Image (cartoon, rainbow, N blue to C red; front, top):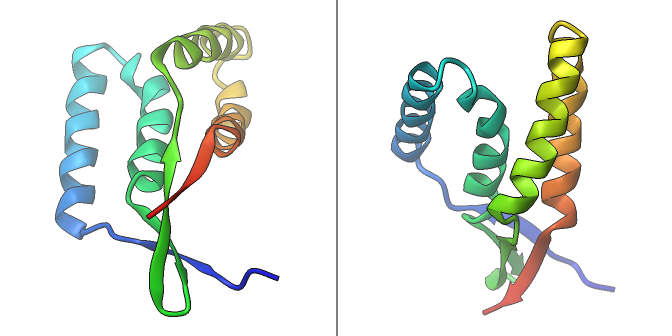
Length: 109
């Protein structure tokens, strides 16, 4: 059985910079960026996460989520959010998490 854990190598400055960038993008795109942000956030964290076993890094996570997949998923959820007056956005966040998890690989170091 594999005994390992995840180690996220993420600084507070990187988090603040990423959040500020997406706030600016959301304002400039009149809110459309708010729908893209969950993908960017998940990929941002996943791409800085490592698999640790026996006290050393043995792999890293890589999310292979391309722009085409994001756009198809995004258009569907924007339509649902408009139809449900924003209530679908809560469920959308869980679907983004599932999509990112399904597209994440462990790359050996």
